[in-house]
Image 1 (cartoon, rainbow, N blue to C red):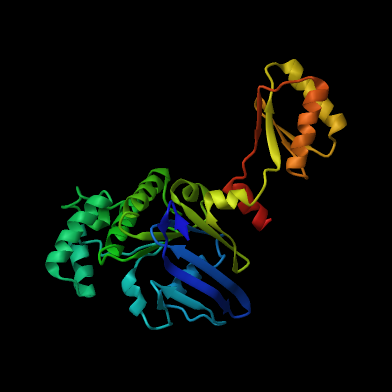
Image 2 (image 1 turned 90 degrees about the vertical axis):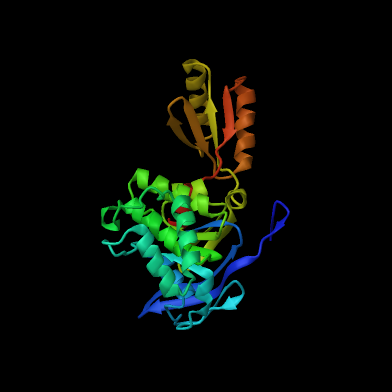
Amino acid sequence: MTQKGVILLGILTIDDLTHSFGKKKVLQGLSLDVPERSVFGFLGQNGAGKTTTMKAVLGLLKPSGGGAISVCGEAVRYGEVTANRHIGYLPDVPEFYGYMRPQEYMALCGAVSGMDANRVKSRTEELLALVGLAGTTNERIRGFSRGMRQRLGIAQALLNEPRLLICDEPTSALDPAGRKEMLDTMLAVRSQTTVLFSTHILADVERVCDRVAMLHGGKTVFSGTLNEIRSRRAADGYSVAFTNDGERDYFLNAVATQLPDVRVTVDGGAIVLNFTDGRAGGARLIALFARLNLVPSLFEECVPTLETMFMEVIG
C-alpha cells in the first residue's frame, strides 16, 4: 500500500481470527491490516469483540477457532509475549500506584522492563512533555483527573519506544475536555509510533484517524481510509435550498406529485431528498428543476458520513 508515495509497511496483520466464549461466537474470521505511520480506528458496538481482538494481539487470549496474528512480521502466539516488545498498550481503565509521582511510576515501569536508568529518565522527561504532563513533577497520581491518567498511561506505554501503540476505548469514559486532551495526545504521538485505538465514538475517529476498520458480526465489514470508504457508497441524497418561501413551497408540492418515491426531510432552510436509485435520482431531480423553471440557491450531494454507514451496518 502507498500513501502520498510512501510505502506503508504492515505493523499489525490479523488473518481469519476466530474466537468463541462458550456457544457465543465473538470473532468469525476477522481480518485486519494496520499500516505503519497511521492512526487506525477500530470501530464496533460495545460487545462487538474489539477488546477480545486486542487481547489476542497481546498473546493474552488463545483464539478458540484459529487464525494468524503478526506484529512487525513476528507471529503472535498465546502465552508467548516476545512480540510484545514492539507494542505499547493502554487498557480502557489503566491502574496506577496513587501514592507515586509520574516520574517515580515511569522509573518503576522502566526498571521492570529492564531499561537503562539514564534512558528511562530522558524518555520520561520527553514523554511527559509530549502528553502535556510536564508540569506535574510534584503531584501524586491519586490527584490526577481521568484524562490525566489516560495521558500518563500513553506515556508509560511509549516508554520502550514501541512501533505499535494499542489503546482500548481511550475516550469512552471521559468528559468532552478529557476526550479532546486524549485525541490531541494521540495526534501528538503519531510521530513516534503507529496508533491503533478501539472505539464506538465515531466523531473521535473522524477527527484523528487516517484509516479505519469496522467490526460487526465477528468480521471486518469495511476497512481503508475514510475517503476510500465513503467513495464505495454513492450518494443517495441531495440538499436543495431556494431564495424565497414561494419557490420552496412550489418545489415541495411538485416533488410530492412528480417524485412520489422520494423521501423528503426539511432541515431548517434546506430540503434533503433521498432517492433509492442514487445518482439516477439526481438526474430526475435536475429534470424537475428544468420543468419548473427553478434555479435553486443550493444544490449539492449529501456526502455519506461514517455515522450513516455505521448505522446501516448495524441496522
